[in-house]
Length: 434
Image 1 (tube, rainbow, N blue to C red):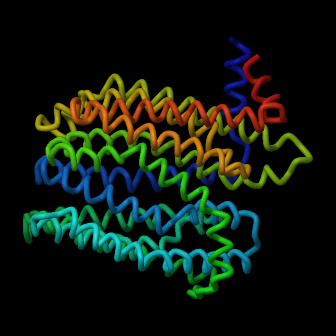
Image 2: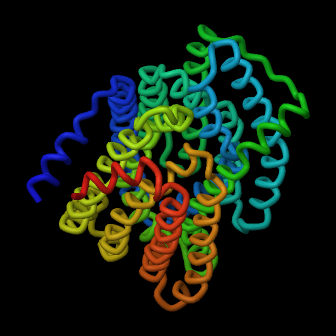
Image 3: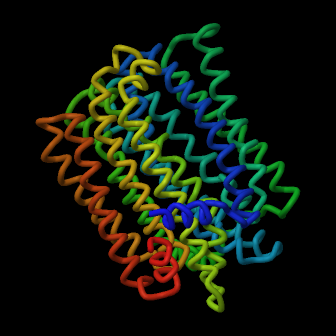
Protein backbone atom coordinates (compact mmCIF):
# COMPACT_ATOMS: atom_id res chain seq x y z
CA UNK A 1 0.00 0.00 0.00
CA UNK A 2 2.83 2.38 0.87
CA UNK A 3 4.52 1.60 -2.42
CA UNK A 4 1.25 2.25 -4.23
CA UNK A 5 0.96 5.69 -2.59
CA UNK A 6 4.58 6.52 -3.38
CA UNK A 7 4.17 5.48 -7.01
CA UNK A 8 0.99 7.52 -7.17
CA UNK A 9 2.87 10.63 -6.05
CA UNK A 10 5.63 9.98 -8.56
CA UNK A 11 3.29 9.51 -11.49
CA UNK A 12 1.06 12.48 -10.67
CA UNK A 13 4.06 14.82 -10.86
CA UNK A 14 4.05 15.64 -14.57
CA UNK A 15 7.46 16.42 -16.00
CA UNK A 16 6.19 17.15 -19.50
CA UNK A 17 6.05 20.91 -20.01
CA UNK A 18 3.68 20.64 -22.97
CA UNK A 19 1.15 18.62 -21.00
CA UNK A 20 1.46 21.04 -18.07
CA UNK A 21 0.82 23.96 -20.37
CA UNK A 22 -2.14 22.28 -22.02
CA UNK A 23 -3.66 21.34 -18.67
CA UNK A 24 -3.24 24.88 -17.39
CA UNK A 25 -4.66 26.75 -20.39
CA UNK A 26 -7.44 24.26 -21.16
CA UNK A 27 -8.35 24.04 -17.50
CA UNK A 28 -8.37 27.83 -17.24
CA UNK A 29 -10.52 28.20 -20.34
CA UNK A 30 -13.04 25.67 -19.07
CA UNK A 31 -13.18 27.15 -15.58
CA UNK A 32 -13.78 30.66 -16.91
CA UNK A 33 -16.24 29.79 -19.66
CA UNK A 34 -18.14 27.16 -17.69
CA UNK A 35 -18.41 29.39 -14.63
CA UNK A 36 -19.89 32.21 -16.68
CA UNK A 37 -22.15 29.82 -18.57
CA UNK A 38 -23.25 28.21 -15.32
CA UNK A 39 -24.16 31.60 -13.88
CA UNK A 40 -26.18 32.29 -17.00
CA UNK A 41 -27.80 28.85 -16.86
CA UNK A 42 -28.85 29.45 -13.25
CA UNK A 43 -30.27 32.85 -14.17
CA UNK A 44 -32.27 31.41 -17.08
CA UNK A 45 -33.54 28.48 -14.99
CA UNK A 46 -34.68 30.77 -12.17
CA UNK A 47 -36.07 33.70 -14.13
CA UNK A 48 -37.72 31.94 -17.08
CA UNK A 49 -39.15 28.92 -15.23
CA UNK A 50 -38.95 25.16 -15.57
CA UNK A 51 -41.01 24.94 -18.77
CA UNK A 52 -38.88 27.42 -20.71
CA UNK A 53 -35.73 25.84 -19.31
CA UNK A 54 -37.03 22.52 -20.58
CA UNK A 55 -37.67 24.02 -24.02
CA UNK A 56 -34.11 25.37 -24.10
CA UNK A 57 -32.72 21.95 -23.19
CA UNK A 58 -34.84 20.22 -25.83
CA UNK A 59 -33.84 22.67 -28.59
CA UNK A 60 -30.16 22.71 -27.58
CA UNK A 61 -29.99 18.91 -27.58
CA UNK A 62 -31.46 18.65 -31.08
CA UNK A 63 -29.01 21.30 -32.27
CA UNK A 64 -26.09 19.42 -30.69
CA UNK A 65 -26.78 16.44 -32.91
CA UNK A 66 -26.49 18.58 -36.01
CA UNK A 67 -23.30 20.13 -34.61
CA UNK A 68 -21.80 16.67 -34.30
CA UNK A 69 -22.83 15.83 -37.86
CA UNK A 70 -21.11 18.96 -39.15
CA UNK A 71 -18.04 18.28 -37.03
CA UNK A 72 -17.99 14.54 -37.68
CA UNK A 73 -14.81 13.83 -35.72
CA UNK A 74 -12.84 16.35 -37.77
CA UNK A 75 -11.66 18.38 -34.77
CA UNK A 76 -10.24 15.38 -32.90
CA UNK A 77 -8.71 13.94 -36.05
CA UNK A 78 -7.30 17.35 -37.02
CA UNK A 79 -5.77 17.95 -33.59
CA UNK A 80 -3.93 14.64 -33.68
CA UNK A 81 -2.72 15.13 -37.25
CA UNK A 82 -1.62 18.75 -36.80
CA UNK A 83 0.44 17.72 -33.76
CA UNK A 84 2.55 15.66 -36.20
CA UNK A 85 2.75 18.21 -39.06
CA UNK A 86 4.86 21.29 -39.75
CA UNK A 87 3.34 24.74 -40.18
CA UNK A 88 2.60 24.79 -43.97
CA UNK A 89 0.97 21.37 -43.88
CA UNK A 90 -1.04 22.22 -40.76
CA UNK A 91 -2.50 25.28 -42.53
CA UNK A 92 -3.42 23.13 -45.51
CA UNK A 93 -5.15 20.60 -43.26
CA UNK A 94 -7.11 23.36 -41.49
CA UNK A 95 -8.45 24.65 -44.81
CA UNK A 96 -9.38 21.13 -45.87
CA UNK A 97 -11.27 20.45 -42.65
CA UNK A 98 -12.99 23.85 -42.81
CA UNK A 99 -14.12 23.02 -46.34
CA UNK A 100 -15.48 19.64 -45.23
CA UNK A 101 -17.50 21.29 -42.44
CA UNK A 102 -19.01 23.87 -44.78
CA UNK A 103 -19.78 21.07 -47.23
CA UNK A 104 -21.77 19.39 -44.41
CA UNK A 105 -23.36 22.62 -43.19
CA UNK A 106 -25.85 23.27 -45.98
CA UNK A 107 -27.74 19.93 -45.91
CA UNK A 108 -27.64 19.99 -42.09
CA UNK A 109 -29.28 23.42 -41.99
CA UNK A 110 -31.99 22.37 -44.45
CA UNK A 111 -32.74 19.19 -42.49
CA UNK A 112 -32.74 21.05 -39.15
CA UNK A 113 -35.18 23.67 -40.40
CA UNK A 114 -37.46 21.00 -41.83
CA UNK A 115 -37.32 19.06 -38.55
CA UNK A 116 -38.22 22.19 -36.58
CA UNK A 117 -41.38 22.70 -38.62
CA UNK A 118 -42.40 19.10 -37.89
CA UNK A 119 -41.62 19.17 -34.15
CA UNK A 120 -43.00 22.50 -32.96
CA UNK A 121 -46.68 23.31 -33.22
CA UNK A 122 -46.77 26.68 -31.43
CA UNK A 123 -45.27 29.66 -33.21
CA UNK A 124 -43.09 30.95 -30.35
CA UNK A 125 -41.32 27.61 -29.87
CA UNK A 126 -40.77 27.25 -33.62
CA UNK A 127 -39.26 30.74 -33.92
CA UNK A 128 -37.04 30.04 -30.91
CA UNK A 129 -35.79 26.84 -32.57
CA UNK A 130 -35.28 28.38 -36.01
CA UNK A 131 -33.13 31.19 -34.59
CA UNK A 132 -31.22 28.89 -32.26
CA UNK A 133 -30.35 26.40 -35.00
CA UNK A 134 -28.58 29.12 -37.04
CA UNK A 135 -25.74 28.64 -34.53
CA UNK A 136 -24.70 25.79 -36.83
CA UNK A 137 -23.15 28.37 -39.17
CA UNK A 138 -20.58 29.87 -36.75
CA UNK A 139 -20.09 26.39 -35.24
CA UNK A 140 -18.85 25.07 -38.60
CA UNK A 141 -16.08 27.71 -38.50
CA UNK A 142 -14.75 26.64 -35.08
CA UNK A 143 -10.95 26.75 -34.84
CA UNK A 144 -10.03 25.94 -31.23
CA UNK A 145 -8.92 22.45 -32.25
CA UNK A 146 -6.24 23.99 -34.48
CA UNK A 147 -4.74 26.04 -31.65
CA UNK A 148 -4.63 22.92 -29.49
CA UNK A 149 -2.92 20.91 -32.24
CA UNK A 150 -0.16 23.50 -32.73
CA UNK A 151 0.19 23.88 -28.93
CA UNK A 152 -1.01 27.50 -28.87
CA UNK A 153 -3.45 26.73 -26.08
CA UNK A 154 -3.19 30.16 -24.47
CA UNK A 155 -5.51 31.52 -27.19
CA UNK A 156 -8.30 29.09 -26.28
CA UNK A 157 -9.20 30.72 -22.91
CA UNK A 158 -9.57 34.07 -24.66
CA UNK A 159 -11.94 32.65 -27.28
CA UNK A 160 -14.11 30.99 -24.66
CA UNK A 161 -14.02 34.01 -22.35
CA UNK A 162 -15.22 36.30 -25.14
CA UNK A 163 -18.10 33.97 -26.00
CA UNK A 164 -19.17 33.29 -22.41
CA UNK A 165 -18.86 36.88 -21.25
CA UNK A 166 -20.76 38.20 -24.27
CA UNK A 167 -23.50 35.66 -23.63
CA UNK A 168 -23.83 36.45 -19.92
CA UNK A 169 -23.73 40.24 -20.26
CA UNK A 170 -26.31 40.29 -23.05
CA UNK A 171 -28.68 37.87 -21.28
CA UNK A 172 -28.64 40.03 -18.16
CA UNK A 173 -28.85 43.33 -20.03
CA UNK A 174 -31.73 42.29 -22.29
CA UNK A 175 -33.74 40.76 -19.42
CA UNK A 176 -33.46 43.81 -17.15
CA UNK A 177 -33.39 46.65 -19.69
CA UNK A 178 -35.00 45.49 -22.92
CA UNK A 179 -37.37 42.51 -22.79
CA UNK A 180 -38.18 39.41 -20.73
CA UNK A 181 -39.25 37.53 -23.85
CA UNK A 182 -37.61 34.10 -23.96
CA UNK A 183 -36.87 34.36 -27.69
CA UNK A 184 -33.89 36.60 -26.88
CA UNK A 185 -31.97 33.65 -25.42
CA UNK A 186 -31.60 32.09 -28.86
CA UNK A 187 -30.57 35.42 -30.41
CA UNK A 188 -27.92 36.03 -27.75
CA UNK A 189 -26.55 32.48 -28.11
CA UNK A 190 -26.04 33.02 -31.83
CA UNK A 191 -24.50 36.48 -31.42
CA UNK A 192 -22.00 35.32 -28.75
CA UNK A 193 -20.78 32.51 -30.98
CA UNK A 194 -20.26 34.90 -33.91
CA UNK A 195 -18.28 37.38 -31.77
CA UNK A 196 -15.93 34.67 -30.47
CA UNK A 197 -15.39 33.39 -34.02
CA UNK A 198 -14.40 36.85 -35.20
CA UNK A 199 -11.70 37.03 -32.54
CA UNK A 200 -10.51 33.46 -33.20
CA UNK A 201 -10.06 34.12 -36.91
CA UNK A 202 -8.22 37.36 -36.26
CA UNK A 203 -5.66 35.26 -34.34
CA UNK A 204 -5.74 32.44 -36.84
CA UNK A 205 -4.88 34.72 -39.76
CA UNK A 206 -1.61 35.61 -38.00
CA UNK A 207 -0.54 31.98 -38.37
CA UNK A 208 -2.02 30.59 -41.59
CA UNK A 209 -3.74 31.69 -44.76
CA UNK A 210 -7.42 30.74 -44.69
CA UNK A 211 -9.01 29.58 -47.91
CA UNK A 212 -12.10 27.47 -48.54
CA UNK A 213 -11.70 24.99 -51.36
CA UNK A 214 -13.92 22.10 -52.30
CA UNK A 215 -11.55 19.38 -53.44
CA UNK A 216 -13.63 16.21 -53.45
CA UNK A 217 -10.58 13.94 -53.27
CA UNK A 218 -9.30 15.64 -50.12
CA UNK A 219 -12.79 15.86 -48.60
CA UNK A 220 -13.26 12.13 -49.16
CA UNK A 221 -9.86 11.40 -47.62
CA UNK A 222 -10.60 13.36 -44.43
CA UNK A 223 -14.05 11.81 -44.04
CA UNK A 224 -12.62 8.31 -44.47
CA UNK A 225 -10.04 8.95 -41.74
CA UNK A 226 -12.30 10.65 -39.22
CA UNK A 227 -15.74 9.09 -39.64
CA UNK A 228 -15.16 6.52 -36.87
CA UNK A 229 -14.37 9.33 -34.43
CA UNK A 230 -17.47 11.14 -35.67
CA UNK A 231 -19.64 8.09 -35.13
CA UNK A 232 -18.21 7.72 -31.63
CA UNK A 233 -19.12 11.33 -30.85
CA UNK A 234 -22.69 10.89 -32.09
CA UNK A 235 -23.12 7.64 -30.17
CA UNK A 236 -21.73 9.29 -27.03
CA UNK A 237 -24.22 12.11 -27.43
CA UNK A 238 -27.00 9.58 -27.91
CA UNK A 239 -26.43 7.73 -24.67
CA UNK A 240 -25.66 10.88 -22.67
CA UNK A 241 -28.61 13.07 -23.59
CA UNK A 242 -30.92 11.46 -26.11
CA UNK A 243 -33.16 10.89 -23.09
CA UNK A 244 -33.80 14.66 -23.06
CA UNK A 245 -35.35 14.38 -26.51
CA UNK A 246 -37.32 11.27 -25.55
CA UNK A 247 -38.62 13.01 -22.43
CA UNK A 248 -39.74 15.87 -24.66
CA UNK A 249 -41.76 13.47 -26.80
CA UNK A 250 -43.10 11.18 -24.04
CA UNK A 251 -43.61 13.64 -21.18
CA UNK A 252 -43.70 17.45 -21.00
CA UNK A 253 -41.48 20.52 -20.73
CA UNK A 254 -41.58 20.37 -16.93
CA UNK A 255 -40.08 16.86 -16.82
CA UNK A 256 -37.53 17.90 -19.44
CA UNK A 257 -36.65 20.97 -17.34
CA UNK A 258 -36.11 18.87 -14.19
CA UNK A 259 -33.92 16.32 -15.97
CA UNK A 260 -32.19 18.99 -18.02
CA UNK A 261 -31.03 20.72 -14.82
CA UNK A 262 -29.56 17.45 -13.51
CA UNK A 263 -27.91 16.50 -16.78
CA UNK A 264 -26.46 20.01 -17.22
CA UNK A 265 -24.78 19.81 -13.83
CA UNK A 266 -23.58 16.28 -14.60
CA UNK A 267 -22.07 17.40 -17.92
CA UNK A 268 -20.26 20.22 -16.12
CA UNK A 269 -18.87 17.76 -13.58
CA UNK A 270 -17.43 15.48 -16.29
CA UNK A 271 -15.69 18.33 -18.13
CA UNK A 272 -12.36 17.70 -16.32
CA UNK A 273 -12.09 14.30 -18.03
CA UNK A 274 -12.29 15.91 -21.47
CA UNK A 275 -9.73 18.55 -20.41
CA UNK A 276 -7.31 15.86 -19.24
CA UNK A 277 -7.70 13.91 -22.48
CA UNK A 278 -7.30 17.03 -24.65
CA UNK A 279 -4.15 17.95 -22.72
CA UNK A 280 -2.61 14.49 -23.15
CA UNK A 281 -3.94 13.81 -26.66
CA UNK A 282 -1.07 15.34 -28.66
CA UNK A 283 1.49 13.55 -26.45
CA UNK A 284 -0.39 10.25 -26.64
CA UNK A 285 -0.57 10.56 -30.44
CA UNK A 286 3.13 11.30 -30.76
CA UNK A 287 4.14 8.55 -28.35
CA UNK A 288 2.37 5.94 -30.45
CA UNK A 289 4.80 6.60 -33.31
CA UNK A 290 7.80 6.35 -30.98
CA UNK A 291 8.01 2.63 -30.30
CA UNK A 292 11.73 2.69 -29.49
CA UNK A 293 11.20 3.44 -25.77
CA UNK A 294 8.68 3.20 -22.96
CA UNK A 295 7.34 6.71 -23.41
CA UNK A 296 3.92 5.47 -24.52
CA UNK A 297 3.45 3.54 -21.28
CA UNK A 298 4.67 6.32 -19.00
CA UNK A 299 2.38 8.87 -20.60
CA UNK A 300 -0.58 6.51 -20.37
CA UNK A 301 -0.05 5.80 -16.66
CA UNK A 302 0.05 9.51 -15.86
CA UNK A 303 -3.04 10.01 -17.98
CA UNK A 304 -4.80 7.10 -16.23
CA UNK A 305 -4.00 8.47 -12.76
CA UNK A 306 -5.37 11.89 -13.55
CA UNK A 307 -8.63 10.46 -14.89
CA UNK A 308 -9.35 7.99 -12.08
CA UNK A 309 -8.35 10.22 -9.16
CA UNK A 310 -10.44 13.04 -10.61
CA UNK A 311 -13.37 10.67 -11.10
CA UNK A 312 -13.35 9.39 -7.51
CA UNK A 313 -13.08 12.91 -6.11
CA UNK A 314 -15.87 14.45 -8.19
CA UNK A 315 -18.22 11.50 -7.70
CA UNK A 316 -17.82 11.64 -3.91
CA UNK A 317 -18.40 15.38 -3.72
CA UNK A 318 -21.41 15.21 -6.05
CA UNK A 319 -23.07 12.42 -4.07
CA UNK A 320 -22.65 14.34 -0.81
CA UNK A 321 -23.57 17.81 -2.02
CA UNK A 322 -26.28 17.14 -4.64
CA UNK A 323 -29.09 18.63 -2.48
CA UNK A 324 -26.98 21.69 -1.71
CA UNK A 325 -26.09 22.17 -5.38
CA UNK A 326 -29.72 22.05 -6.50
CA UNK A 327 -31.07 24.23 -3.68
CA UNK A 328 -28.27 26.79 -3.81
CA UNK A 329 -28.07 27.27 -7.57
CA UNK A 330 -31.48 26.41 -8.97
CA UNK A 331 -33.89 26.90 -6.09
CA UNK A 332 -36.87 25.09 -4.64
CA UNK A 333 -38.65 24.60 -7.97
CA UNK A 334 -35.91 22.15 -8.99
CA UNK A 335 -35.90 19.95 -5.84
CA UNK A 336 -37.02 16.91 -7.92
CA UNK A 337 -33.67 17.18 -9.75
CA UNK A 338 -31.78 15.94 -6.68
CA UNK A 339 -32.62 12.27 -7.26
CA UNK A 340 -31.53 12.10 -10.93
CA UNK A 341 -28.40 14.12 -10.10
CA UNK A 342 -27.41 11.61 -7.40
CA UNK A 343 -27.98 8.74 -9.79
CA UNK A 344 -25.85 10.49 -12.40
CA UNK A 345 -23.17 11.14 -9.76
CA UNK A 346 -22.44 7.41 -9.69
CA UNK A 347 -21.95 7.64 -13.42
CA UNK A 348 -19.08 10.12 -12.99
CA UNK A 349 -16.62 7.46 -11.85
CA UNK A 350 -17.70 5.14 -14.67
CA UNK A 351 -17.15 7.95 -17.18
CA UNK A 352 -13.63 8.54 -15.82
CA UNK A 353 -12.78 4.86 -16.38
CA UNK A 354 -14.24 5.03 -19.89
CA UNK A 355 -12.07 8.06 -20.66
CA UNK A 356 -9.01 6.41 -19.13
CA UNK A 357 -9.19 3.23 -21.20
CA UNK A 358 -11.28 4.35 -24.17
CA UNK A 359 -9.83 7.59 -25.49
CA UNK A 360 -6.27 6.23 -25.90
CA UNK A 361 -7.82 3.88 -28.48
CA UNK A 362 -8.44 7.03 -30.57
CA UNK A 363 -4.89 8.31 -30.11
CA UNK A 364 -3.45 4.86 -30.87
CA UNK A 365 -5.50 4.30 -34.02
CA UNK A 366 -8.03 1.80 -32.76
CA UNK A 367 -10.98 4.10 -33.31
CA UNK A 368 -13.16 1.29 -34.64
CA UNK A 369 -13.37 -0.35 -31.23
CA UNK A 370 -14.09 2.95 -29.52
CA UNK A 371 -16.97 3.42 -31.96
CA UNK A 372 -18.30 -0.10 -31.39
CA UNK A 373 -18.35 0.47 -27.62
CA UNK A 374 -20.22 3.75 -27.85
CA UNK A 375 -22.66 2.31 -30.38
CA UNK A 376 -23.51 -0.43 -27.87
CA UNK A 377 -24.07 2.25 -25.22
CA UNK A 378 -26.32 4.26 -27.52
CA UNK A 379 -28.48 1.26 -28.39
CA UNK A 380 -28.71 0.29 -24.72
CA UNK A 381 -29.73 3.81 -23.76
CA UNK A 382 -32.43 4.12 -26.41
CA UNK A 383 -33.89 0.72 -25.53
CA UNK A 384 -33.91 1.40 -21.79
CA UNK A 385 -35.43 4.84 -22.25
CA UNK A 386 -38.36 3.36 -24.16
CA UNK A 387 -38.91 0.99 -21.23
CA UNK A 388 -38.20 3.30 -18.27
CA UNK A 389 -39.30 6.82 -19.25
CA UNK A 390 -43.05 6.11 -19.67
CA UNK A 391 -43.26 4.83 -16.09
CA UNK A 392 -40.37 6.50 -14.24
CA UNK A 393 -39.85 9.70 -16.28
CA UNK A 394 -36.57 11.54 -15.55
CA UNK A 395 -35.52 9.03 -12.85
CA UNK A 396 -35.77 6.23 -15.39
CA UNK A 397 -33.75 8.33 -17.84
CA UNK A 398 -30.97 8.75 -15.25
CA UNK A 399 -30.80 5.00 -14.59
CA UNK A 400 -30.73 4.33 -18.34
CA UNK A 401 -27.71 6.64 -18.67
CA UNK A 402 -25.80 4.84 -15.90
CA UNK A 403 -26.46 1.37 -17.31
CA UNK A 404 -25.47 2.57 -20.80
CA UNK A 405 -22.18 3.92 -19.48
CA UNK A 406 -21.45 0.62 -17.73
CA UNK A 407 -21.91 -1.18 -21.07
CA UNK A 408 -19.58 1.30 -22.79
CA UNK A 409 -16.97 1.13 -20.04
CA UNK A 410 -16.92 -2.68 -20.01
CA UNK A 411 -16.34 -2.88 -23.76
CA UNK A 412 -13.65 -0.17 -23.75
CA UNK A 413 -11.68 -1.92 -21.02
CA UNK A 414 -12.01 -5.22 -22.90
CA UNK A 415 -10.74 -3.75 -26.19
CA UNK A 416 -7.93 -1.89 -24.44
CA UNK A 417 -6.53 -5.04 -22.86
CA UNK A 418 -7.12 -7.07 -26.00
CA UNK A 419 -4.90 -4.83 -28.13
CA UNK A 420 -2.51 -3.26 -25.61
CA UNK A 421 -2.60 -5.64 -22.63
CA UNK A 422 0.63 -7.47 -23.45
CA UNK A 423 2.70 -4.46 -24.43
CA UNK A 424 4.76 -1.87 -22.66
CA UNK A 425 1.69 -0.06 -21.39
CA UNK A 426 0.45 -3.10 -19.51
CA UNK A 427 3.84 -3.80 -17.92
CA UNK A 428 4.21 -0.29 -16.58
CA UNK A 429 0.59 -0.25 -15.50
CA UNK A 430 1.01 -3.55 -13.64
CA UNK A 431 4.25 -2.40 -12.03
CA UNK A 432 2.46 0.65 -10.67
CA UNK A 433 -0.01 -1.49 -8.70
CA UNK A 434 2.53 -3.88 -7.18
